[in-house]
Length: 103
Image (cartoon, rainbow, N blue to C red; front, side):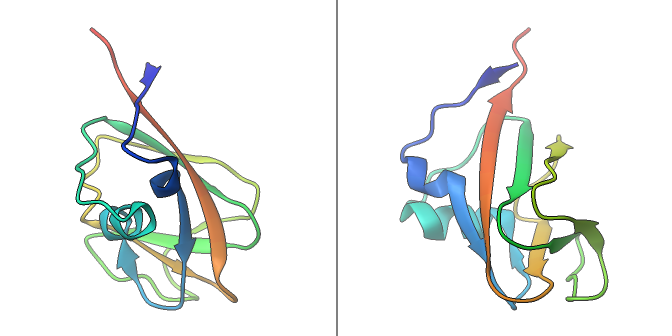
């Protein structure tokens, strides 16, 4: 795997709020860009609070897969527009690491 260069480092630092939002939208909003991620792995790291995720469904503050603050979670081969995130309480800063497998 190698890191992916993005148009702006801003889209690697997102804010997850009380509204279930796709990872793709969060990245484009944070980076003020319409760029499409062409990698195949994303590491999601909540920095200052817990979040929940769901694929092709809308998580709630109490339902969905929990990712605890400070715990990295790797997602491979997923459509970023179908991966939805929500905070459990208080807006959460989340860092992302993007990579792509090299054959």
